[in-house]
Amino acid sequence: MLPRPRPHRAFGAIRLSLTAFIAVHVFISAWLVVSIEGVYTEGKPAPTEAHSLVAIDKDRTMIDVEIKKATSFFFYTLERDGDASVPVDTSSSQTNDTTSDQGNRSDKEANTEQGNEGEEDWLGTGRQSITTALVVLVLSELLMLSSFKWRHHVRTLALLFVVLAFSVVFPACYMLDLAGGGGAEEDNTATNTPGANIETVSFVHTNTSSDLSLTWLGLQLEADFSGYDLGLVEPENRTNVAEHVPEEGSQDASSFIAFESTFDVQLGKNLDSLLVLPVMWYLLPAAGRSEPSKSSDRIEEE
Image (cartoon, rainbow, N blue to C red; front, top):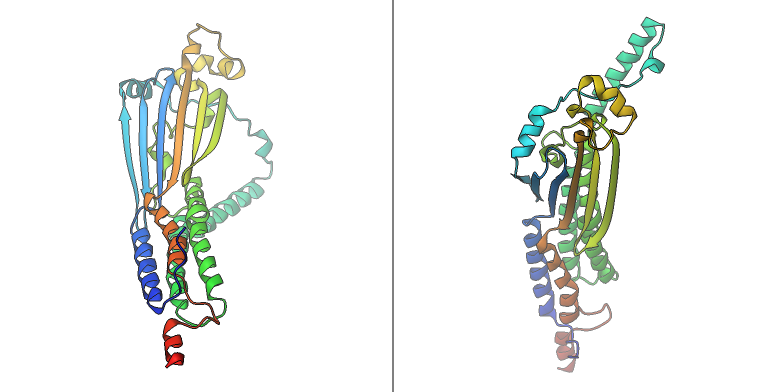
């Protein structure tokens, strides 16, 4: 293994320039890439496939959706009754006091309006955290040119702050945005997935399963869903189907639908360039607080 070079004053300018270059390179690239692959495996919409790609950068959320073998899904949407749903018993929420009921309804509307006004722009918050982290990273390298005692620790914490912002904070903000907490300007991936507009109460005897695994710079979620779509059942049979699983081979059994999906959430491909920084710190070391520079040594010798 080659010996580590001795600190030199010129190394500081090189480190600062390279850190700023990497920070800008990462800043203008995609920060989060989400790939969604879905396919109907059973039922009338099968074998329709849906492929979605979401790329999020400093300014925009770009969504590309492609649907393959869509003929069966097209006829499925024409055939099903979108208003079909499982009956819900709301008798427990009724009250004999009409005035009180109107007051509760008014309070609910007021709370809803306040909630809408106070919606958090989660993606905006995530973008701000990454921008701040990158700026702090560059400033921490600039601090290395000073004689501040804890400058090495500040630089290490700044890099950890960047890694945390990209790997935890921003993906969490994206998931919160998908959950409905985002601003009106952002697109919701779920609304671009075929079948996402189908109310879950329209399906009965459902089964769901998921498996989460880690990948390089991301994670992968495999999710399966199956159930009986009441929108494909005759109105007079819906109550019976909701209470009992249809017999195999019956007309109502044809309402069974199965869907498999895979979600790949990965950090931007350019983010691994941040790993160059620790290598650079080793190859281009900064002088310690009590370590004199080469120029100082020459002055003392003279």
